Length: 396
Image (cartoon, rainbow, N blue to C red):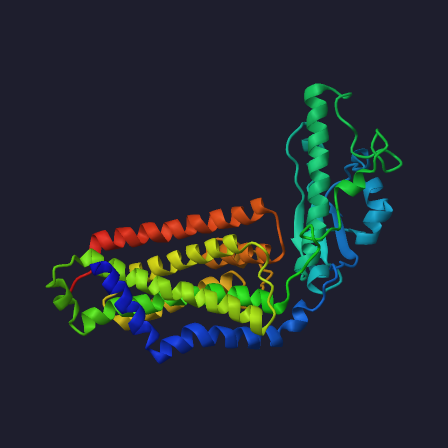
């Protein structure tokens, strides 16, 4: 009953605070409305994106014959000519200059020992030079990587099992020996989800702001923990027949309850006001919200216990949340590889991708994969919070 009294007191205190009500309940809905309307044109098209022909410069650094691996036949197929405009280049420097001037979108530099490595069964690679278009870089690199994988696989199989065990990469007419066109195995145009649905700006920013403000809810817990120390009331609480751990847990649980209420308000409010479709899997949506709140509270607990002042703890928590939201694409999707790689280590990334897949009606396994990764990240925060409490404790 003692810990329940602390939880109830914490809930009542937060509900009576007007600034808390505005920041936790009204501000998210307002931001979702602004971002959803302002950035709606970026999400307006429901059609599949089409990549126009990619201008590629192919640089051969020796007189090696690549036709025995079917490269010319592969590039001359109608499918490849529709996607790639390939011209021969003289040197790597020429390719770099063409990309800098915008004449080329992508460049491929074939090492002089490519043919010899393939014939020896070694893994052979080409050097790629990316251009200014992130999407065109991905298309070109995907095509050439797939071709190289097939070349290496075929040659390695020939060396190990004999020439009759492997199928040539491409025959003279552009098809495999069993008559199936291998070109279609390299590139496939398809939707990212089976239903062919796409999310709107309101859906994207409703999910993003939900996660960000759930993480910000840890700020309230941090301020509550420090307020007892700053106002010298923690000493009085410790003089009562109740353990410090109960006081600590009561405050965290009370703030967590407010965070769950905040999630419910955002989800129901955006559904009613902005017609946001949150999908048909409320159990997985609730699971993701629980994991985000857990990560938020443990992050706030760790920072609060390690920082001596409330202002310092508040600043640190705000910076962490903002950085995680930025790197995960919560403010705007950023097609930069290094930023996307960093984003994969954040709570926001796995929570956002999981919620978007719920909205798109993805398979259960795909949703659970993101929930599992989110659980691992939240588990790390839980471990850090537990260690911080054991090392520092909650006392004056």
